[in-house]
Length: 220
Image (tube, rainbow, N blue to C red):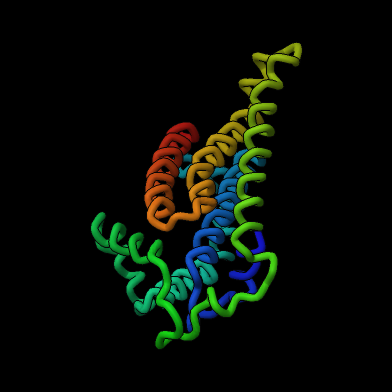
């Protein structure tokens, strides 16, 4: 969560560098908050038909657009690339894969034209690898417990059919499934070996995209 806040503090900073952990943990929490925004759109009954989301998600997306873009640019700076390389995403398939490879690469050692190595200048004790890994693992364990408890409530209520057919259950179930899709990606960041971590991140992203596809089908 601290990495998410760090990005917000650098709201429109397009000049320095961002290490992998800063970018990907921001992305991790941003995805969770986006899922909650969609959840509230459905709970309040304001989701737009055919889109699966509504004003809450749109407002959150607008609020987070600049820091999201800025941290992506800084991540590219960390590997010695211009922020304009973000336009690779406009090239179908190949461009997105190329950009993804850049975003998961380790940053340049020492100083480059965009500034000092953020790994060498980070002094915050709460940003160390061990703390981050512990928080991610604890988050996953808690979410596993909460979601399974939620899905089991129906067996303890008298009118369980109405419970499972309610809009609240459906919206919360979509959110729960979405978060489950994030779990492999979050666990990938606890791996110490760089090669294995990259493999796990790529697989986690593929699984997340598949989960998003299923969630969108569930919404529609």
